[in-house]
Image 1 (cartoon, rainbow, N blue to C red):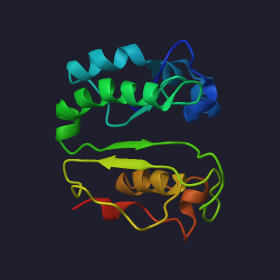
Image 2 (image 1 turned 180 degrees about the vertical axis):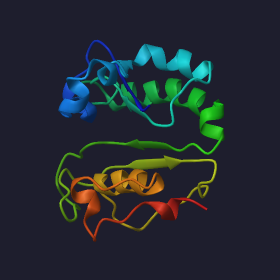
Image 3 (image 1 turned 90 degrees about the horizontal axis):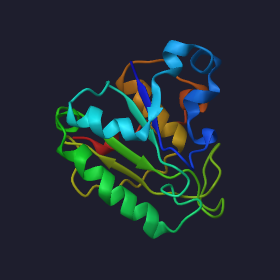
Image 4 (image 1 turned 90 degrees about the vertical axis):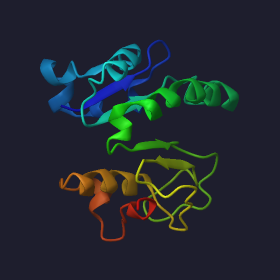
Length: 169
């Protein structure tokens, strides 16, 4: 099944969307799939990852309570192992996105928090591609839902919410 991986110590629950679902939070078997980030490296090295992994860094590595440099350094130490893994090389995709900017400038539709960077890194991705489409976090959710032929949650199902398929060949 899917796996949520969260940073310890300065981790905050609000950054793990799975913990908002009663069916996960109150189900011991499903809740056990929310694991400490420290487990990810071992699972990655052993090629034991599930098909879907959600990674939530702690508040220092996500740049909320520490510098951008701290977050950049964490990504630089964390991402290369993912990109070397069979899980990524064999049809995987790595989405790295931020949750809000410093203003709401440039938002569209139901989005708030301003423009934020989102990286789409995939073996079948277009190298160096930059989309002119204004996507939202709902677009990322819809991309995942459409790729796996799932139903749409919330605003991901709105007719104006486009999946991010232009990033792929």
